[in-house]
Amino acid sequence: MSTEPAETRRTTRVRRRTPPRPLHPPRTRASLNPLSALDPRSLRWKIAALAAAASCAVAVAVGVLVHTTTYDWSLNVGRATALQALMSKATGAGAGGGDGDGDGDVSGSASEDPAALPPELLRQVAAGKTVTWYDDTKPDEPWMWAAVRDNGRVLAVKMDMGAERRSLQALDRHIIMATLAALAIVMPLAALVAELSNRRLRRVAGTVRRIAGGDLDARIGAGGRTRDEIGEISAAVDSMASALQERLLAEQRFTADVAHELRTPLMGLITSAELLPEGEVTELVRDRVGVLRALVEDLLEISRLDAGAERADHVPVPLGEVVEESVRRTGLPARVEVTAHPMADTDPRRLDRIIANLVANAHRHGRPPVEVSVRGTTIVVRDHGPGFPDTLLAEGPRRFRTGAKERGKGHGLGLTIALGQAQVIGAALDFANAPDGGAVATVRLEAGARD
Image (cartoon, rainbow, N blue to C red):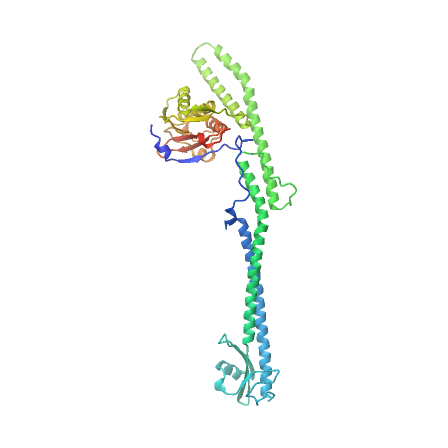
Protein backbone atom coordinates (compact mmCIF):
# COMPACT_ATOMS: atom_id res chain seq x y z
CA MET A 1 0.00 0.00 0.00
CA SER A 2 1.31 3.47 -0.84
CA THR A 3 0.77 6.35 1.51
CA GLU A 4 2.69 9.02 -0.40
CA PRO A 5 -0.38 11.28 -0.93
CA ALA A 6 -0.89 11.33 2.84
CA GLU A 7 2.73 12.41 3.32
CA THR A 8 2.29 15.40 1.02
CA ARG A 9 -1.07 16.44 2.33
CA ARG A 10 -1.90 19.69 4.09
CA THR A 11 -2.58 18.70 7.68
CA THR A 12 -4.65 20.50 10.26
CA ARG A 13 -3.99 19.98 13.96
CA VAL A 14 -7.21 19.47 15.87
CA ARG A 15 -7.42 19.76 19.60
CA ARG A 16 -10.10 18.69 21.95
CA ARG A 17 -12.40 21.51 22.91
CA THR A 18 -12.53 22.82 26.47
CA PRO A 19 -12.56 19.85 28.84
CA PRO A 20 -13.05 20.91 32.45
CA ARG A 21 -9.68 19.61 33.66
CA PRO A 22 -7.25 18.67 30.91
CA LEU A 23 -5.09 15.61 31.43
CA HIS A 24 -2.08 17.49 30.08
CA PRO A 25 -2.52 21.20 30.89
CA PRO A 26 -0.83 23.45 28.36
CA ARG A 27 2.37 25.07 29.45
CA THR A 28 2.04 28.70 30.43
CA ARG A 29 4.17 30.97 28.34
CA ALA A 30 6.87 33.02 29.97
CA SER A 31 5.70 36.36 31.31
CA LEU A 32 8.36 38.19 29.30
CA ASN A 33 9.74 37.07 25.99
CA PRO A 34 13.19 38.64 25.41
CA LEU A 35 12.42 39.01 21.71
CA SER A 36 9.17 40.84 22.42
CA ALA A 37 11.13 43.55 24.25
CA LEU A 38 12.80 44.40 20.94
CA ASP A 39 9.71 44.04 18.76
CA PRO A 40 8.74 47.52 17.52
CA ARG A 41 5.15 46.31 17.14
CA SER A 42 4.76 45.68 20.86
CA LEU A 43 2.51 47.93 22.89
CA ARG A 44 5.47 48.99 25.02
CA TRP A 45 7.23 50.70 22.14
CA LYS A 46 4.02 52.05 20.67
CA ILE A 47 3.30 53.86 23.93
CA ALA A 48 6.91 55.05 24.12
CA ALA A 49 6.71 56.28 20.51
CA LEU A 50 3.43 58.07 21.27
CA ALA A 51 5.00 59.76 24.31
CA ALA A 52 8.04 60.71 22.22
CA ALA A 53 5.82 62.09 19.45
CA ALA A 54 3.82 64.11 21.98
CA SER A 55 7.03 65.43 23.55
CA CYS A 56 8.41 66.35 20.13
CA ALA A 57 5.18 68.13 19.22
CA VAL A 58 5.27 70.14 22.44
CA ALA A 59 8.98 70.89 22.02
CA VAL A 60 8.49 72.00 18.41
CA ALA A 61 5.54 74.21 19.34
CA VAL A 62 7.42 75.81 22.25
CA GLY A 63 10.60 76.12 20.17
CA VAL A 64 8.80 77.81 17.27
CA LEU A 65 7.05 80.17 19.68
CA VAL A 66 10.30 81.08 21.48
CA HIS A 67 12.18 81.43 18.19
CA THR A 68 9.51 83.63 16.64
CA THR A 69 9.15 85.80 19.75
CA THR A 70 12.89 86.25 20.13
CA TYR A 71 13.30 87.00 16.43
CA ASP A 72 10.55 89.63 16.50
CA TRP A 73 11.97 91.14 19.66
CA SER A 74 15.46 91.41 18.15
CA LEU A 75 14.04 93.08 15.03
CA ASN A 76 12.07 95.57 17.12
CA VAL A 77 15.15 96.40 19.17
CA GLY A 78 17.19 96.76 15.99
CA ARG A 79 14.62 99.09 14.42
CA ALA A 80 14.46 101.24 17.53
CA THR A 81 18.23 101.46 17.73
CA ALA A 82 18.57 102.25 14.03
CA LEU A 83 15.92 105.01 14.23
CA GLN A 84 17.61 106.49 17.26
CA ALA A 85 20.94 106.52 15.43
CA LEU A 86 19.27 108.05 12.37
CA MET A 87 17.78 110.86 14.46
CA SER A 88 21.19 111.51 16.03
CA LYS A 89 22.84 111.73 12.62
CA ALA A 90 20.08 113.93 11.22
CA THR A 91 20.35 116.46 14.08
CA GLY A 92 24.12 116.40 14.00
CA ALA A 93 24.40 114.78 17.44
CA GLY A 94 26.82 112.09 16.27
CA ALA A 95 30.51 112.79 16.03
CA GLY A 96 31.98 113.38 12.62
CA GLY A 97 29.10 115.50 11.25
CA GLY A 98 27.02 112.54 10.08
CA ASP A 99 29.73 110.52 8.32
CA GLY A 100 31.30 108.93 11.38
CA ASP A 101 30.05 106.68 14.08
CA GLY A 102 27.42 107.67 16.58
CA ASP A 103 27.98 108.61 20.19
CA GLY A 104 28.63 106.19 23.02
CA ASP A 105 24.96 105.26 23.41
CA VAL A 106 24.09 104.74 19.77
CA SER A 107 26.43 103.46 17.07
CA GLY A 108 25.94 102.95 13.37
CA SER A 109 27.27 103.74 9.92
CA ALA A 110 25.70 106.74 8.15
CA SER A 111 25.68 107.41 4.44
CA GLU A 112 24.20 110.04 2.11
CA ASP A 113 25.53 108.58 -1.15
CA PRO A 114 22.63 106.99 -3.08
CA ALA A 115 25.05 104.73 -4.92
CA ALA A 116 26.09 103.16 -1.60
CA LEU A 117 22.53 102.45 -0.49
CA PRO A 118 20.60 99.23 -1.34
CA PRO A 119 18.01 99.66 -4.13
CA GLU A 120 15.27 98.23 -1.92
CA LEU A 121 15.96 100.87 0.74
CA LEU A 122 15.84 103.65 -1.84
CA ARG A 123 12.57 102.29 -3.19
CA GLN A 124 11.00 102.24 0.25
CA VAL A 125 12.32 105.63 1.32
CA ALA A 126 10.89 107.18 -1.85
CA ALA A 127 7.38 106.33 -0.62
CA GLY A 128 7.80 107.78 2.85
CA LYS A 129 9.91 110.05 4.94
CA THR A 130 11.38 107.65 7.51
CA VAL A 131 11.65 103.89 6.93
CA THR A 132 13.47 100.85 8.38
CA TRP A 133 14.53 97.79 6.41
CA TYR A 134 16.10 94.53 7.57
CA ASP A 135 18.72 93.40 5.09
CA ASP A 136 19.28 89.64 5.36
CA THR A 137 20.39 89.05 1.77
CA LYS A 138 23.68 87.89 3.29
CA PRO A 139 22.71 85.54 6.17
CA ASP A 140 26.16 85.90 7.77
CA GLU A 141 26.03 89.74 7.64
CA PRO A 142 22.50 90.95 8.51
CA TRP A 143 21.90 94.70 8.78
CA MET A 144 19.10 96.92 10.02
CA TRP A 145 18.72 100.07 7.92
CA ALA A 146 16.97 103.29 8.84
CA ALA A 147 16.60 106.04 6.24
CA VAL A 148 14.93 109.43 5.90
CA ARG A 149 14.39 111.73 2.88
CA ASP A 150 14.77 115.41 3.69
CA ASN A 151 14.92 118.18 1.10
CA GLY A 152 15.70 115.78 -1.70
CA ARG A 153 18.57 114.09 0.02
CA VAL A 154 18.56 110.64 1.69
CA LEU A 155 20.24 110.03 5.00
CA ALA A 156 20.62 106.36 5.95
CA VAL A 157 22.05 104.49 8.93
CA LYS A 158 22.77 100.76 9.16
CA MET A 159 23.16 98.71 12.32
CA ASP A 160 24.99 95.40 12.55
CA MET A 161 22.53 92.60 13.51
CA GLY A 162 25.09 89.76 13.51
CA ALA A 163 25.16 89.48 17.29
CA GLU A 164 21.38 89.10 17.43
CA ARG A 165 21.48 86.48 14.64
CA ARG A 166 24.14 84.47 16.47
CA SER A 167 22.22 84.72 19.71
CA LEU A 168 19.11 83.41 17.97
CA GLN A 169 21.03 80.49 16.44
CA ALA A 170 22.49 79.63 19.86
CA LEU A 171 18.97 79.68 21.31
CA ASP A 172 17.78 77.27 18.59
CA ARG A 173 20.64 74.88 19.35
CA HIS A 174 19.83 74.95 23.06
CA ILE A 175 16.18 74.19 22.34
CA ILE A 176 17.15 71.19 20.17
CA MET A 177 19.57 69.90 22.78
CA ALA A 178 16.98 70.28 25.51
CA THR A 179 14.42 68.43 23.36
CA LEU A 180 16.81 65.54 22.73
CA ALA A 181 17.68 65.35 26.42
CA ALA A 182 13.99 65.29 27.31
CA LEU A 183 13.35 62.50 24.77
CA ALA A 184 16.24 60.50 26.18
CA ILE A 185 14.48 60.62 29.54
CA VAL A 186 10.86 60.42 28.42
CA MET A 187 11.13 57.37 26.14
CA PRO A 188 12.69 54.99 28.73
CA LEU A 189 10.27 56.23 31.39
CA ALA A 190 7.33 55.74 29.01
CA ALA A 191 8.54 52.21 28.18
CA LEU A 192 8.88 51.36 31.88
CA VAL A 193 5.45 52.73 32.69
CA ALA A 194 3.95 50.86 29.72
CA GLU A 195 5.58 47.65 30.94
CA LEU A 196 3.36 47.70 34.04
CA SER A 197 0.27 47.57 31.85
CA ASN A 198 1.92 45.11 29.45
CA ARG A 199 2.50 42.64 32.27
CA ARG A 200 -1.17 42.73 33.18
CA LEU A 201 -2.17 42.35 29.53
CA ARG A 202 0.22 39.41 29.08
CA ARG A 203 -1.28 37.80 32.16
CA VAL A 204 -4.75 38.23 30.68
CA ALA A 205 -3.58 36.79 27.33
CA GLY A 206 -1.87 33.85 29.03
CA THR A 207 -4.99 33.03 31.05
CA VAL A 208 -7.17 33.25 27.93
CA ARG A 209 -4.82 30.85 26.12
CA ARG A 210 -5.05 28.42 29.04
CA ILE A 211 -8.85 28.63 28.95
CA ALA A 212 -8.84 28.09 25.17
CA GLY A 213 -6.54 25.08 25.73
CA GLY A 214 -9.07 23.51 28.09
CA ASP A 215 -8.03 24.70 31.56
CA LEU A 216 -11.34 26.19 32.67
CA ASP A 217 -10.04 26.49 36.22
CA ALA A 218 -7.63 29.24 35.09
CA ARG A 219 -8.45 32.69 36.44
CA ILE A 220 -6.75 36.04 36.15
CA GLY A 221 -7.69 37.06 39.69
CA ALA A 222 -7.79 40.84 39.39
CA GLY A 223 -8.51 41.06 43.12
CA GLY A 224 -8.35 44.57 44.54
CA ARG A 225 -6.60 46.14 41.58
CA THR A 226 -7.63 49.52 40.31
CA ARG A 227 -10.79 49.21 38.28
CA ASP A 228 -9.30 50.47 35.04
CA GLU A 229 -9.94 49.07 31.57
CA ILE A 230 -7.53 46.17 32.05
CA GLY A 231 -9.19 45.35 35.37
CA GLU A 232 -12.58 45.32 33.67
CA ILE A 233 -11.25 42.98 30.98
CA SER A 234 -9.79 40.68 33.64
CA ALA A 235 -13.05 40.56 35.56
CA ALA A 236 -14.98 39.91 32.34
CA VAL A 237 -12.66 37.04 31.35
CA ASP A 238 -12.94 35.47 34.81
CA SER A 239 -16.72 35.80 34.70
CA MET A 240 -16.83 34.28 31.21
CA ALA A 241 -14.62 31.35 32.26
CA SER A 242 -16.77 30.67 35.33
CA ALA A 243 -19.99 30.77 33.32
CA LEU A 244 -18.49 28.58 30.59
CA GLN A 245 -17.19 26.08 33.13
CA GLU A 246 -20.56 25.86 34.89
CA ARG A 247 -22.38 25.40 31.59
CA LEU A 248 -20.01 22.70 30.35
CA LEU A 249 -20.12 20.87 33.66
CA ALA A 250 -23.91 21.02 33.62
CA GLU A 251 -24.00 19.59 30.09
CA GLN A 252 -21.51 16.88 31.00
CA ARG A 253 -23.47 15.93 34.10
CA PHE A 254 -26.63 15.81 32.03
CA THR A 255 -24.99 13.56 29.42
CA ALA A 256 -23.61 11.26 32.10
CA ASP A 257 -26.92 11.12 33.99
CA VAL A 258 -28.89 10.38 30.82
CA ALA A 259 -26.47 7.61 29.84
CA HIS A 260 -26.62 6.04 33.30
CA GLU A 261 -30.40 6.28 33.45
CA LEU A 262 -30.70 4.64 30.04
CA ARG A 263 -28.61 1.64 31.03
CA THR A 264 -31.31 0.07 33.21
CA PRO A 265 -34.17 0.13 30.67
CA LEU A 266 -31.66 -0.73 27.94
CA MET A 267 -30.63 -3.92 29.72
CA GLY A 268 -34.32 -4.81 29.95
CA LEU A 269 -34.69 -4.23 26.22
CA ILE A 270 -31.67 -6.41 25.48
CA THR A 271 -33.03 -9.22 27.65
CA SER A 272 -36.49 -8.93 26.09
CA ALA A 273 -35.04 -8.93 22.59
CA GLU A 274 -33.16 -12.14 23.32
CA LEU A 275 -36.43 -13.81 24.38
CA LEU A 276 -38.25 -12.93 21.17
CA PRO A 277 -38.82 -15.75 18.69
CA GLU A 278 -36.43 -15.89 15.78
CA GLY A 279 -37.55 -13.98 12.71
CA GLU A 280 -36.94 -10.99 10.51
CA VAL A 281 -38.67 -8.59 12.89
CA THR A 282 -36.67 -9.96 15.82
CA GLU A 283 -33.40 -9.39 13.98
CA LEU A 284 -34.43 -5.83 13.22
CA VAL A 285 -35.31 -5.20 16.86
CA ARG A 286 -32.03 -6.72 18.07
CA ASP A 287 -30.08 -4.61 15.58
CA ARG A 288 -31.71 -1.39 16.76
CA VAL A 289 -31.21 -2.36 20.40
CA GLY A 290 -27.55 -3.01 19.65
CA VAL A 291 -27.22 0.45 18.07
CA LEU A 292 -28.86 1.98 21.14
CA ARG A 293 -26.55 0.06 23.44
CA ALA A 294 -23.46 1.23 21.52
CA LEU A 295 -24.71 4.81 21.70
CA VAL A 296 -25.20 4.62 25.47
CA GLU A 297 -21.74 3.10 25.94
CA ASP A 298 -20.24 5.86 23.81
CA LEU A 299 -22.01 8.49 25.89
CA LEU A 300 -20.70 6.94 29.10
CA GLU A 301 -17.19 6.88 27.68
CA ILE A 302 -17.40 10.52 26.64
CA SER A 303 -18.67 11.49 30.09
CA ARG A 304 -15.66 9.78 31.68
CA LEU A 305 -13.31 11.54 29.27
CA ASP A 306 -14.95 14.88 30.00
CA ALA A 307 -14.63 14.32 33.73
CA GLY A 308 -10.92 13.52 33.40
CA ALA A 309 -11.46 10.16 35.08
CA GLU A 310 -9.55 8.16 32.46
CA ARG A 311 -5.91 7.25 33.13
CA ALA A 312 -3.54 5.54 30.75
CA ASP A 313 -1.62 2.36 31.61
CA HIS A 314 1.55 2.54 29.51
CA VAL A 315 3.43 -0.62 28.62
CA PRO A 316 5.91 -1.42 25.83
CA VAL A 317 4.04 -3.09 22.97
CA PRO A 318 4.85 -4.13 19.38
CA LEU A 319 2.95 -1.38 17.62
CA GLY A 320 2.49 -3.20 14.31
CA GLU A 321 0.95 -6.27 15.92
CA VAL A 322 -1.36 -4.15 18.09
CA VAL A 323 -2.63 -2.24 15.06
CA GLU A 324 -3.12 -5.41 12.99
CA GLU A 325 -5.07 -7.05 15.83
CA SER A 326 -7.21 -3.92 16.28
CA VAL A 327 -8.12 -3.85 12.60
CA ARG A 328 -8.85 -7.57 12.61
CA ARG A 329 -11.24 -7.26 15.57
CA THR A 330 -13.29 -4.61 13.77
CA GLY A 331 -14.28 -7.22 11.17
CA LEU A 332 -13.95 -4.56 8.47
CA PRO A 333 -11.71 -4.92 5.42
CA ALA A 334 -8.58 -2.77 5.53
CA ARG A 335 -5.07 -3.10 4.17
CA VAL A 336 -2.42 -2.85 6.88
CA GLU A 337 1.20 -1.99 6.13
CA VAL A 338 3.83 -2.07 8.89
CA THR A 339 7.34 -0.69 8.39
CA ALA A 340 10.21 -1.98 10.60
CA HIS A 341 7.84 -3.40 13.27
CA PRO A 342 8.45 -0.64 15.85
CA MET A 343 7.95 -0.80 19.63
CA ALA A 344 5.91 1.86 21.43
CA ASP A 345 5.30 2.77 25.06
CA THR A 346 1.54 3.26 25.15
CA ASP A 347 -1.78 1.93 26.46
CA PRO A 348 -2.75 -0.90 24.06
CA ARG A 349 -6.40 -0.98 25.14
CA ARG A 350 -6.95 2.70 24.45
CA LEU A 351 -4.89 2.57 21.26
CA ASP A 352 -7.11 -0.29 20.11
CA ARG A 353 -10.13 1.90 20.75
CA ILE A 354 -8.62 4.72 18.69
CA ILE A 355 -7.71 2.51 15.72
CA ALA A 356 -11.10 0.75 15.77
CA ASN A 357 -12.98 4.05 15.75
CA LEU A 358 -10.86 5.48 12.92
CA VAL A 359 -11.29 2.37 10.77
CA ALA A 360 -15.04 2.24 11.48
CA ASN A 361 -15.36 5.93 10.67
CA ALA A 362 -13.48 5.42 7.38
CA HIS A 363 -15.90 2.64 6.35
CA ARG A 364 -19.00 4.45 7.55
CA HIS A 365 -18.29 7.86 6.03
CA GLY A 366 -15.68 7.15 3.33
CA ARG A 367 -15.18 4.67 0.52
CA PRO A 368 -12.88 1.66 0.17
CA PRO A 369 -10.13 0.80 0.03
CA VAL A 370 -9.30 1.68 3.63
CA GLU A 371 -5.55 1.69 4.25
CA VAL A 372 -3.71 1.58 7.57
CA SER A 373 0.04 2.20 7.65
CA VAL A 374 2.44 2.06 10.60
CA ARG A 375 5.74 3.90 10.22
CA GLY A 376 7.75 4.26 13.36
CA THR A 377 5.33 5.51 16.02
CA THR A 378 3.04 7.13 13.45
CA ILE A 379 -0.20 5.45 12.39
CA VAL A 380 -2.09 6.68 9.32
CA VAL A 381 -5.68 5.60 8.52
CA ARG A 382 -6.94 6.64 5.11
CA ASP A 383 -10.02 6.09 3.01
CA HIS A 384 -10.81 7.15 -0.56
CA GLY A 385 -14.10 8.92 0.02
CA PRO A 386 -15.05 12.62 -0.13
CA GLY A 387 -12.71 13.51 2.74
CA PHE A 388 -13.31 15.33 5.99
CA PRO A 389 -15.56 18.42 5.87
CA ASP A 390 -13.97 21.82 6.26
CA THR A 391 -15.71 22.42 9.59
CA LEU A 392 -14.09 19.33 11.09
CA LEU A 393 -10.64 20.35 9.83
CA ALA A 394 -11.11 23.85 11.27
CA GLU A 395 -12.84 23.07 14.57
CA GLY A 396 -12.18 19.40 15.24
CA PRO A 397 -14.73 16.60 15.66
CA ARG A 398 -17.92 17.55 17.45
CA ARG A 399 -20.26 15.10 19.10
CA PHE A 400 -23.58 14.46 17.36
CA ARG A 401 -22.39 16.11 14.17
CA THR A 402 -21.15 14.16 11.16
CA GLY A 403 -20.39 17.11 8.88
CA ALA A 404 -20.94 16.76 5.13
CA LYS A 405 -23.96 14.87 3.87
CA GLU A 406 -21.89 12.89 1.39
CA ARG A 407 -19.99 11.30 4.28
CA GLY A 408 -23.07 9.45 5.43
CA LYS A 409 -25.02 9.35 8.66
CA GLY A 410 -23.97 8.71 12.24
CA HIS A 411 -23.88 10.12 15.74
CA GLY A 412 -20.53 11.83 15.32
CA LEU A 413 -19.09 10.24 18.48
CA GLY A 414 -16.40 7.99 17.03
CA LEU A 415 -13.85 10.69 16.21
CA THR A 416 -14.66 12.54 19.43
CA ILE A 417 -13.88 9.44 21.47
CA ALA A 418 -10.74 8.74 19.43
CA LEU A 419 -9.51 12.28 20.06
CA GLY A 420 -10.24 12.01 23.78
CA GLN A 421 -8.46 8.66 24.12
CA ALA A 422 -5.50 10.03 22.16
CA GLN A 423 -5.15 12.80 24.71
CA VAL A 424 -5.33 10.27 27.54
CA ILE A 425 -2.36 8.29 26.17
CA GLY A 426 -0.47 11.48 25.29
CA ALA A 427 -0.72 11.14 21.51
CA ALA A 428 -1.53 13.69 18.81
CA LEU A 429 -4.40 13.02 16.42
CA ASP A 430 -4.46 15.03 13.19
CA PHE A 431 -7.16 15.16 10.53
CA ALA A 432 -6.51 16.09 6.90
CA ASN A 433 -7.59 15.43 3.33
CA ALA A 434 -5.25 13.81 0.80
CA PRO A 435 -4.55 15.83 -2.37
CA ASP A 436 -5.95 13.04 -4.56
CA GLY A 437 -9.06 12.61 -2.40
CA GLY A 438 -9.89 10.77 0.77
CA ALA A 439 -9.80 11.43 4.51
CA VAL A 440 -6.51 10.94 6.38
CA ALA A 441 -6.29 10.50 10.16
CA THR A 442 -2.79 10.44 11.68
CA VAL A 443 -1.92 9.24 15.19
CA ARG A 444 1.52 10.29 16.46
CA LEU A 445 2.39 8.53 19.66
CA GLU A 446 5.64 10.41 20.15
CA ALA A 447 3.87 13.79 20.15
CA GLY A 448 2.57 13.63 23.72
CA ALA A 449 4.21 13.05 27.07
CA ARG A 450 3.64 9.87 28.98
CA ASP A 451 0.77 10.14 31.44
